[in-house]
Image 1: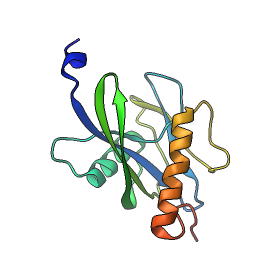
Image 2 (image 1 turned 120 degrees about the vertical axis):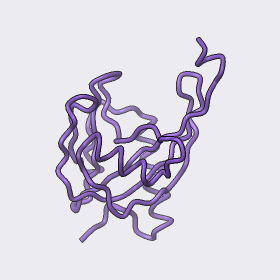
Image 3 (image 1 turned 90 degrees about the horizontal axis):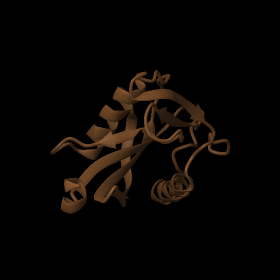
Image 4 (image 1 turned 135 degrees about the horizontal axis):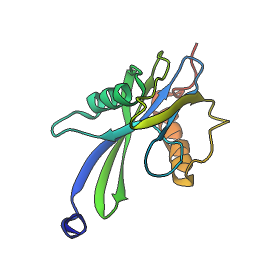
Length: 145
């Protein structure tokens, strides 16, 4: 009830981590929905979005994030709170090892074969973020050699 009355602002990160083949890392949590989603989570007070992305990815999947850059900030509703989400894109050469507590499954998927179930909002967001990255970088993250 207090959460709804106060309507706080929280800040977090969403990480789009690609491997050398251009496949995207996705995960499923042990709680909430059964949907596949991108690694991420809340930022500590004063924490930079790139540092938070590296920490969250490591904590949830055991993967190390390299070449990270923020591509967009989105504002979402989170149960009545304002959720500011920093979308970060980068690479990882690591093999995901879910923590088994918060994350029960994690794997890489080609962009044309993403896992189900996955929310339509996340699927549309991914298209937008990939286009934003392509325009900013001239090529986009998945292309790698």
